[in-house]
Image 1 (tube, each protein chain N blue to C red):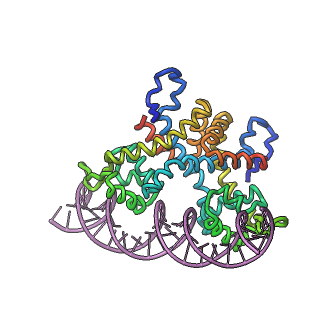
Image 2: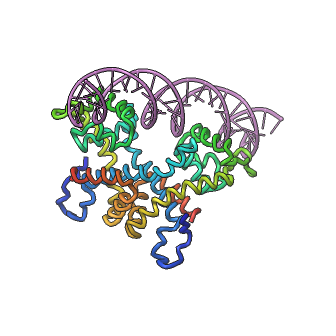
Image 3: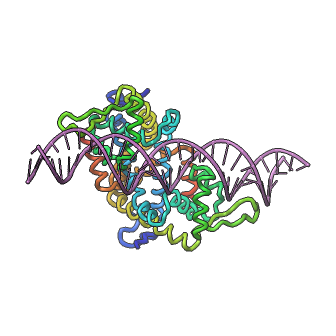
Length: 170
Length: 170
DNA sequence: CTTGGAGTGTCAACAAGGCTGACGTAATAT
DNA sequence: ATATTACGTCAGCCTTGTTGACACTCCAAG
């Protein structure tokens, strides 16, 4: 397996960012940063007896209103049983609406209610605040690099989902 | 709350990376990228009846050999009961050694056995392979930005842990 | 020497949120 | 008519997080 410990050959110092040590630091940065990334919404959700799973569902329903259950399943990468448990509580609590499809009546189209939109706003405001601070601190060039590396890190199917959302969203 | 939807005022286009839409794309990039980031080790661990928690413990014991349980607790951000359950199975399976401290015999110093080192190597090779590919694809400047943003995203205590590991490690 | 407290380990009980498998129902496709 | 798709649901299991309670070892202060 590729060692990469000492890139002293051709390319040399240009490849310093590919040493094992640099890669390990990248891993740890991802680990600690992801903790920070989820910390603020987690605090809000705890009070409401919801979890990260509810946040994810709310986020992507808001992002793609009218999406079907199956589509959401693919984006979130969980089983329908897992998603359904979350969805059931969100519908029962009046945050999400499930409408039978007009063309294909087997499908359910998911929307946020006003209450759902309010919670989504609360959660994304909290998360955006931290992200905004981090982006501002790091600067535009760093942000461009950040996005570039994250995109390259995704699985191909996830990259496709991400790109699709990017188109529809803005 | 700060809207940021249309940064048309002073600063203008320089702040395009701080629009709500850009921030939302940043969130989604984190979500999808983190999935990719953990996918490869997860596959290996599944076969061994271990989970991500075992991976994290192994990683940081390898990173700081001889670390105490309490120190590991702070880094991982879980309760001692959670960590102890994981540690117990790793010790029982002969991957981790727990040695009573010489100075303070209350403390247990944790080390990987040869088998533990082998697994750590296997896991980090898998994770590094993906990271290396992503870093290579994105280029050195992007990697620098990636690190900069992630660091700014951490909680202060986490940033301290990260910095401490960075010093000792490389 | 006794006592208080820190560091550690362990037991029990519980919850969130993943998973699989099986089954039912309605609607669509073949 | 039959097969397939989309969805919901029940039951059961796993990992990994949580609290609370308790015991043990050891260090240090009184």
